[in-house]
Length: 238
Image 1 (tube, rainbow, N blue to C red):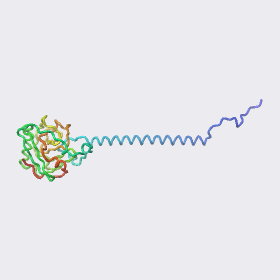
Image 2: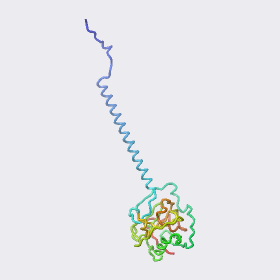
Image 3: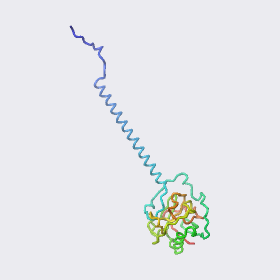
Image 4: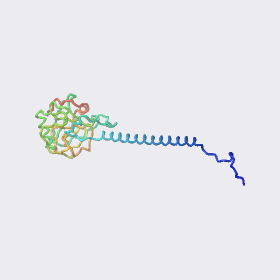
């Protein structure tokens, strides 16, 4: 019996080795490209997340401390709402304090007039008045200036100094960390306030109950807005 042969026209056709090699090469290239694309997307998302976190951190209030040298170089990202000047906002009304009196700060940018409340904050105002009357603040600088706060009263000029004496933390529910508020700066120790004080250019309710607010600006918020780091308090007097 003769063997039957399958004619060439009847054989099953298939890819040649060269075609298989090219197909595998193309598939390999596509896989590598897909992996590279996934990596690029992942890196981009990670960078975007880090940038968002940094922006949020920049906008978050930083408590007004008195011993952090890095505060001089701190910056803050302004939101559209924060870009409007503080002087265009409405400050909180003055609390009832029959002993309230004024303190005038003459700066290189102009005059700032404070109202302080000894009945509501006796420990803090007594300490502040003593320093004012002794001429302690005359010639000192505003060593910390951010978009939401200015801070001064450090004889060293770098955020680490004080008068040599500290006072106990004192708060009053009538006095909040609002636009124009004047309060004592301190370190992480609640009872470490000395001579440094800050003035708010924006409301900062997260600081309520943590810092001794003892007064407010009643005139010169436009001057507060203009203060630059290193500007001097030419004189502070009652």
